[in-house]
Image (cartoon, rainbow, N blue to C red):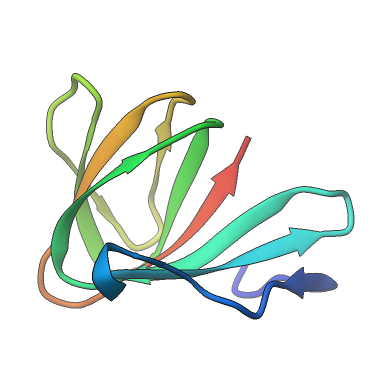
Length: 103
């Protein structure tokens, strides 16, 4: 799907790592939330509360789950991150566009 319909968007951006990651929270009628964002070239570490699915919209990344090995993820692919964990993400070249699905 290329767009979300009938949603609310939090106007204030979530800005992390000195602007290397910027996202907006999207709220759905059923109460679920996602974030839609961009990561500029960098290697970053994110901590999770709830489980997450990182959907790659454009660009590509390498990621490493806590205790795992580096893997690649390209446009149209996704990866799952356990709750109460962390993951490293490396973006080189073009910006990485993503949707983060929570829960």
